[in-house]
Image (cartoon, rainbow, N blue to C red; front, side, top):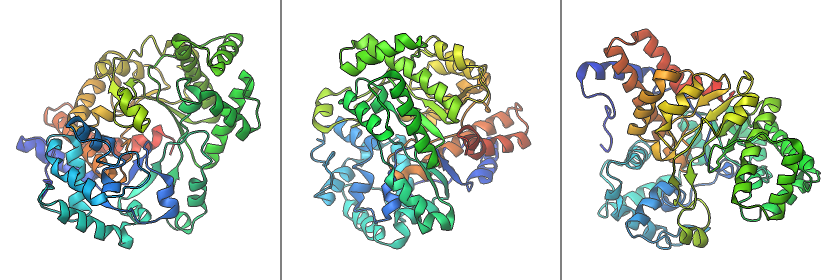
Length: 467
C-alpha cells in the first residue's frame, strides 16, 4: 500500500486508540470545500479529464514549483500551454522526479489519489511511470471518473470556485440549470475575488474598471459609480449562491478615509499616476469598503495577505501570474487591521476570516484578535502551511487563546480537484490526533472531543461560511 491506515496518528498506543475512535466518528462526514480554485466548467461540461499530466501536473503549482527548483524547465512540463501536446513525456518527467516529494504533504495527497481512486499500490517512479499513466488514462475514460461522478464519489456537499467580478459565470449558470443539479442538489458556488479591479498593480487595471462599468451600467470613472458597480457585481454573484468574498492583498493594511479623500485617491490610481504608497493605501481603503458591503449584503469576507506574488520576474513575464513563484513574508495584523476594526470590528452580523502565511503571528496577533472581536474568525493553515506539521502548530498556537470556535474549520485551497479528499482527510486526522492528546492528558473529556472533532470537520466551516 502507498498509504498506511494509521498515518498521522500519535505513536503512543493509548493516545493513538483515542485518535482512531475520533477519526472513525468523522472520516465519512461530507466534505465542505468553501475556498478553492477548481473550475466550474469541469462540472458544466462534464467531459473526461484529458490525460494524467493535464490532471495532476499542469494545474498544480505545488508539483511544478518543486520540479522547477530542481532544474526541470517549465517548457518541458508544457506549463502555461492551453493543451498538453506530449502528455506521456510530461508524465515521465514527473515520475522520474517523484522522489523529490518525499516528506512533503504533496506526496501524501498524490499517494492518496493514486491508491484510493486508481487502485495503484506500487510507488510512482521512472520504472512505473507508464504503468501509472496507462492505468490512470484508462480509468479517466470511464463514466465513474467524469467530474460530476467524482464530485459525488468524494461526498462533496459544497464546492466553491474563485472568480473575478468580470466573469460572466456562464458555467455556474449551466450547472444550476442542469438535471444533475436538480438530481443531487450539487452546490458548486462562485466566490467573489475582486483583486483584478481593486489592486492597481494588476495589468490593465483601468481597462478592467471600465469593463466593470460596462457590465453594471455604472459610471466607473467616478468613485461612487465604481463602488456601485462592485456592489452590483456582488449581488450578481449572490444570485448564483455565492456566500463569500476573497481578498489576496500583499498586506493586511486597511484604511478608513473620508469620502472626498477616497475619491481623489481613486482618480489617481485609475489614471495610472499613483505611486507605490498610494496603491497600497487604495488597497487598504478597499478592504474597508468590502467589509462595509459585506455588512450590507451578508457575504463572508476572507482576507489572506502575506504573499510576495510572482517573485520570479522571468517566470512571470514568460508564463504569467500564479506559476509557483510566490513567497511568504512577515505580516502585521494588529496595526494593519485597526482602521477596519475601529469601524466594523464589533459588528456581530459581519464575519471576516483571516488567513496567515506568517506563523509567528498566530499566537501573538491572530488568536488574540479573533479571541476578542466578534466579527473575526481564523482560517486554517493555508498554502505553505497546509501540512501535518503546519496544522498541528496552528492548533497548538491558536487554541490557547482563540479556542476552537473562533476558527473556521478547514478549506483545501486547491486547483487540483483530485487532491480535495486527501487534504480533508489529513486535516481530520491531525485534528483527531490533537484532540486525542488533550483527552490523554485529561485536558478534555472524551465526549467533548467527539463533539469538537465533528465541529472541526464539518460544523464550523458551514457556520463560518453561512452554508
